[in-house]
Image 1: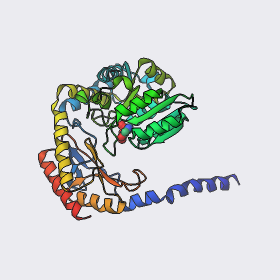
Image 2: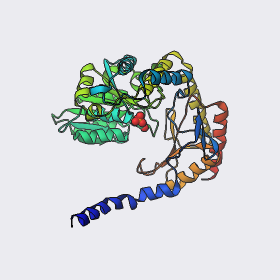
Image 3: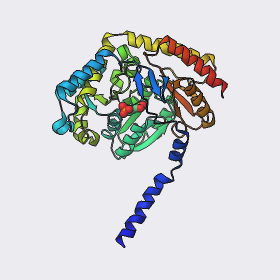
Image 4: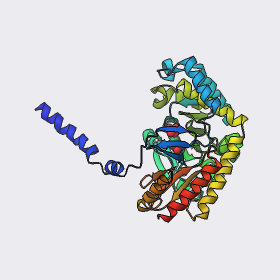
Amino acid sequence: MALSFFSKSKKAVQNRFRDDYATKMRLKYDPYYHAMESQQGTTVRLDGREMIMLSSNDYLGLSFHPKVIEAGRAALLKWGTSTTGARISNGSRAFHIELEEKLAAFLGREACHVHAAGYLSCLSSVAAFAQKGDIIFADKNIHSCLWEGIQLSRATVERFSHNSPDDFREVAAAAASSDAPKLLVIEGVYSMEGHIARLPELTEIAEEHGCFTVLDDAHGFGVLGRNGRGTVDHFGLNDKVDVICGSLSKSLASTGGFVAASREAIEYLRTSSKQTVFSAALSPSQAACAQASLELMQNEREHHERLWANTKKYRAILKNLGLDTWGSETPATPIVLGSKERVYPFWKALLEKGVFTVMSIAPAVPIGKDLIRTAISAMHTDEQLDKIADAMAYAVKKL
Ligand SMILES: Cc1ncc(COP(=O)(O)O)c(C=O)c1O
């Protein structure tokens, strides 16, 4: 009797993944989870063919920089492969503190905490500071990790139209009579759209309503601001944003994430955030790679300059072909095609011509905004940009 009850309930769970439409479609068309056979900078090998990587987040192109590689190697030799524990217990090391102090100083913050993933950092930046009874105002297009942080906090969420100060003003006004603590949750640069947050207007409204502001700058860090200090620095609004979180896996060419804020906010996060307390620390080699990249951002300006020169050139290529880039202002550049029926052949045509990109279709993007997500790196060469131009022209003909 007990056995049959068990097998019945197990089948109910198994049917979820056996019958899942999205998984069936993914396996049929095979657009995701491609395992590259090798990589050298922006050149990857896939199914025995050389391809140009046009969708990584290695904005500054530091993932193959000799100083970053050497820093990772030296850290492995000095500290081993892993601290095998959470920071709160046995996992804290001097190199974590050093990286945190450098990031905090770079961002003009009192303190910083690093996690083993940007996802954890950004999720905990919301989940740790918001709680049930609070009201969170959130841009409709924020990243999944911020939505998860909102859900975990159990606060009430009020969404406003993407990057729209007018809509935020209306939504905030509707909640103005409530005494509940309020937060604003936004990104600095939106990862899919490449839009820069309208920070001056958004923070002004946030201030009027006494909002505690959390900004995820995963795609603004390294890209905008003085020496890549990010979106807040780009607008000179350091005192208007309470928490800056982000990822070490993009401009810093590593993996991991950070939360930068006042000392008391960071100490509170270290006590109360479950993602911080119960997850193993950032590994020695990844911390060292991030720190080496952070130093290069400040000492070798050419990566930043090259990133923007490449972005300008790439944007011109797409514009000449009449492609819709959703008004992207940054190296994260979508090519909006509007439906999966148009996205798939375009993506296949680029692949055929040796350019690797990523498809993003609804519900991952708003309906009607199905797109190819591309991102430029400082490491793309002129020759690669010419090849990308030819491949784009070929793909346009396939539409
Ligand atoms: C806006 C944003 N926040 C956070 C993350 C999570 O960072 P990570 O990939 O380092 O976990 C990402 C990654 O895609 C992102 O785009």
